Image (tube, rainbow, N blue to C red; front, side, top):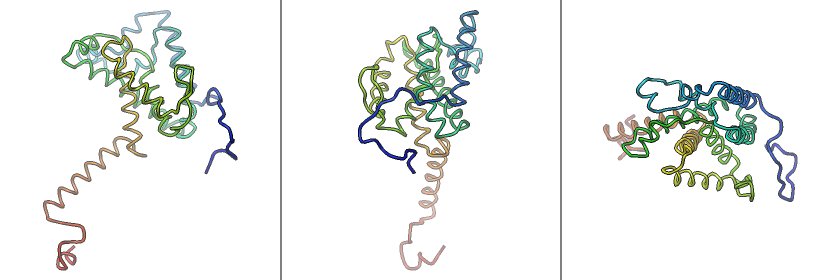
Length: 245
C-alpha cells in the first residue's frame, strides 16, 4: 500500500526527510559531544580513532567502533551528520529503530574492518593505512546511502549539490570515485567502499541479512553434495526410483 494518498503529476523536490527520528537524533548528539570533547582534549583521537597498527599489535579492538564518533573539523562533522539525517531518518521510519541501529553498527564496523584489511596488504598503500588514523562516520553513512538507493532507486539526489540524478546512479558514481581515488587520497576511501559493500551484501541477504544468505548458500551446497553422493535426482531416474523415498 502506498504511503501517499495521491501521486503528483509533476516532479517535486524537498530538502531533507522531515522531523528527526530517535536513533538518528542520539547518533548526532553523540557525535557532537565527542567532537567537542576532542576540541578540549585532542589526544582522544589517538586513543579512540582507528589505527590498524594498534588494533593488531595492542588489541585495541574498541577502535573499530569508537572511530565512528570522531571528526576532525566542523565541516567534517557537519557533512557527515547532514547525511545521517537526510538518509537515516527515512530508513529508521521504514525499518524501526532497532533494525536501523543494527544496520548502522554493521556497516560502520564493517567499514572499519575494511580499513584494517587494507592496512594489512603488502603494498605501500597498505603500509600507510596501517599506521594512519581513520576517524568519522563516513563508512556508516555510505552504508545508509546504499540502503537509501536500494529502496528508493529513482529518488533524485543532488550530485555535488548542483544537479539531480537518481539515487541508484548517485551510489554508482560515488563508489567508483572512492575506488579510483583510494590509493592517493588522504581521505579513507577504503572505509567508504567498505560501508557500501557491507551494506549492499547485508541488504541482498534479505530479512535475515548477510548471515542468513551465507547459511542459505551453505545449506544449498550441502544438499547438492548429498544428492550427488546418494545419486538422488528430482523425480528419480526411473519408475522404480520414483517409489523409493
